Length: 327
Image 1 (cartoon, rainbow, N blue to C red):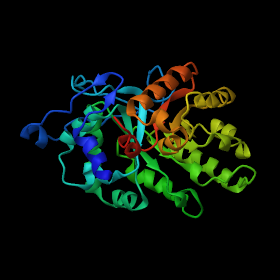
Image 2 (tube, rainbow, N blue to C red):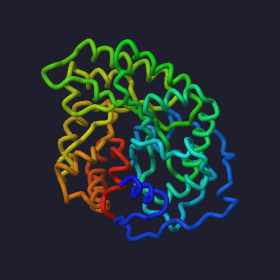
Image 3 (cartoon, helix red, strand yellow):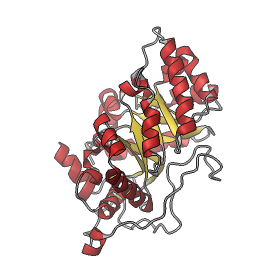
Image 4 (cartoon, rainbow, N blue to C red):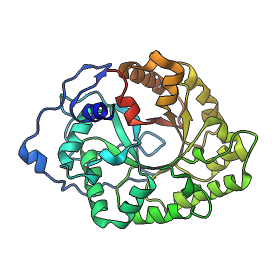
């Protein structure tokens, strides 16, 4: 199954609502060897002049070429989380320019957020050459119209006594031109009726510290019910965090309507929605088992929610699960 997924990423096009597209053509030796001489891409946290109230996930350089005719349709404000970062070329001797071009032509997302487990985070923190390699890859992807973000979800980093490590990591990685950093704190919060108020206090304080220290926009992942734990939603709204990402496990047509009350209750908080694809397939089955069906549904959600000024887009959970859908 993993081999099938890898082949999909590198060589096979997807069937999307825009029609059938062919795979990207072979690259020349010059393209395979080409490096990136792009300038550092600055990602402003405010005052960017963009229409969206959120810092957009995609920032193009002035010299960015038009999207290739063979590229699949790319959906604006639709990102995806990469759970298995081992296929990124920074860990392997692969030409990043060719890789970035193929990825940008094969996937319908305008941003990819990469989850780095503790071991890879530590390697990246300690290895300057590895950071330079990732820096180059981020620029290559940006020049192909795809922004890159970082996902941190190690529960240990959200709990005492390791909580301060997140600030150390941000300091070590601050020269990398990420578009966003996402903290999946929903994994450490307790069920309804079992509020851990000291933990909630600590997470709110962490949101303030990370937002002040981070050179990138900062988001925190919550499940909808967790907004009510210890008034967490209101406190994050006051903490100046850049956005809250709500994890949604029901991907039925009308499930998105359950998000609307939160957009209205917290008008000063910015929101994104994270559909959990694996959980959604279990609940909704064949209704979304094809990429075309899923993308059509997400596009419908976008149209439905964009009337709210504090809605900033959709971030699909797990690229591998997406790759395993039927064309």
